[in-house]
Image 1 (cartoon, helix red, strand yellow):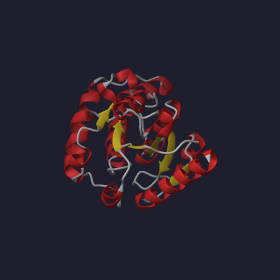
Image 2 (spheres, rainbow, N blue to C red; image 1 turned 120 degrees about the horizontal axis):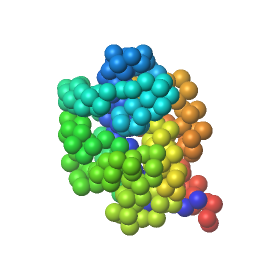
Image 3 (tube, rainbow, N blue to C red; image 1 turned 135 degrees about the horizontal axis):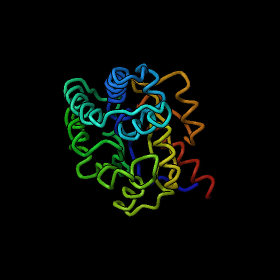
Image 4 (cartoon, rainbow, N blue to C red; image 1 turned 30 degrees about the vertical axis):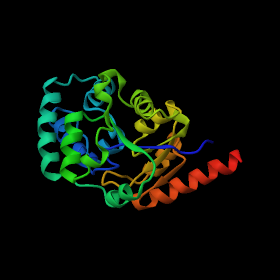
Length: 231
């Protein structure tokens, strides 16, 4: 284990409580399209995935064609809901205020949506230019692929092994692990479910927290553990 020199936050479900809103909108659209699914199942199965990849997975599983109009319809409805309803995750602002390590955001959301959400909850300026969308790298570069995490590490000139990622989804954790990074799972958003922490641990998270206020202590503990192993 090596020491931690960079913190990467996922956005949806880690910094902003947006995954539950997305799950509500997407479950309603899919049910109307002939694929009945609850908000809870939507969150458990597809949180962290792009809407495009979610539709591909459902088409493959259910062998039913889903209209391409679902993509644009979802984007319009979801942007409107997020603009009015998205809230910050409890404890995020105090944690950001006390973080001394460099930190950034790596998300599957578009840059436009990230600006909307982060601006709404008042933390966009805190991250400045260090807000990275996997979609800007290409639709084939989104999590669970590691590209966005590696891109962020390059911006800071930090080796991936010295990066700690905070993720709420199995897909995000798989991407971070594939990038050679360490991961802390997070279950403090409204879309969490009973087996959430277990699934994040199974995916490769070193530990899982349910409150953002626990993060500074976890970072310190993981750093001390790393230093003791290399001493």
